[in-house]
Amino acid sequence: MTITATLVGDIPAIGRAEARALADTENRRVLELLTLLSDDDWNQPTDCPDWDVRALSGHVLGGMEGFSSVRQFVHIMRAASKAAGDGPFVDGMTAVQVQERADVVRPELLERLRVAGPKAARWRSKVPTPFRRVPMKEEVNGVTETWRMGYLLDIILTRDTWMHRVDIARATGREFIASADHDGRIVADAVAEWARRHGEPFTLELTGAAGGTFVAGRDGDEFTLDAVELCRTFSGRSTGEGLLATEVPF
Image (tube, rainbow, N blue to C red):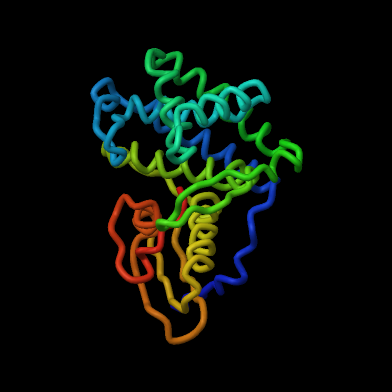
C-alpha cells in the first residue's frame, strides 16, 4: 500500500470559520465523554498534577464560559491578570477557572457545558479584529513569546480542550474518540507549528485515526509514533528527544 505524505508547508492555516467548527465539535465531544463517567471516575488523578477529573472539568467549563460573551471575557481577563501576578497569564486564567467552579455540582456542570460549548465556539469566531490583535505574553520552550488574542481564540482554546479530553480518557480508562477530519486536523495544525518552531527537515509517521505522514525537507530525522502521543509530547506530558523536545502550546 502506498502511503501519501503531506508536505508540512502545504498544511493550510486554520481560519475563523474552520476554527469555529473545530471548537464546536471538540466542545461537544468532551461533554459526551464526561456524561459517560461514573462517580469514581470524577475523583481520578490526571496528567495535570494538581487536578483530578472533577477539577479538570471545571477548567474546561471555565474555558468555554470565559470566552462566550464580552462580560465573561472582561471578567476572566481581569481576574486572570490579578491571579497570575508576575507569572504566566495562562496559569492565572486556569487557576481562576477552576476556583470559581469548584463548588458546582456535576449535573449543573454538565448542563453548563452543554449550553456553553456552542455559545463559546460562536462567540470566539465573532470577536472583532482589533481585539484579536491584542498581545499577550507567554513562555514556550523557555522563551517569552508575544501571542495575539486571535491565536488563543482560534487555536489554543480548542487544543486545550482537546488535550484535556485526552487527559480525562486516560485517567478514567475510557475510549478517546478520534476521527481524521476533526482530530487529524488539530494534530496536523500542531505538526505544522512544530515544524515552524524548529525549522529542521524530518519525516513524521503518525499512527491512529488522527495520524498521517508529514515531511519537511530532505534527509531529516525520522519519527514514528501515535498521533495522540505526539501531542502529549508537544505539551510536555511525555518526554521527547531531539526535535520532539520542541514544545508546542496546548
